[in-house]
Length: 66
Image 1 (cartoon, rainbow, N blue to C red):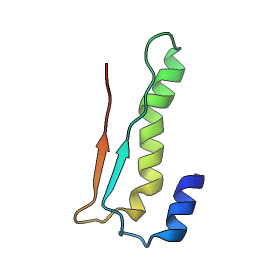
Image 2: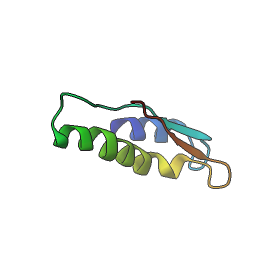
Image 3: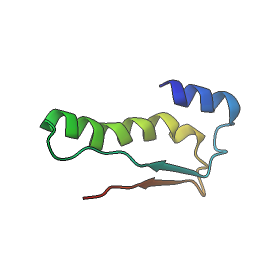
Image 4: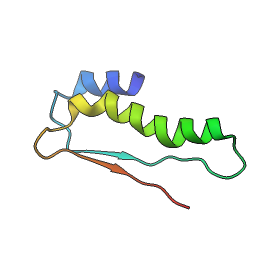
C-alpha cells in the first residue's frame, strides 16, 4: 500500500497516535463493491498501518453512516 510506505518512511514504528477510517458505500452498489469498500478497505488500511500505531496509546476509529 503506497500510503503505508510513504508514512513509514516519515514516521518511526509506534509513533502514530490515531488512524481514522472514514469511507463507505451503500445503496445502488453490488454486494461485492459494498463489502470490498466497507469491510476490506478499513481492514487492509488498518493492517498496513498497524505497525506505525503506538502500542500503548494508539487508537483506530472506524466511522460509518446510514
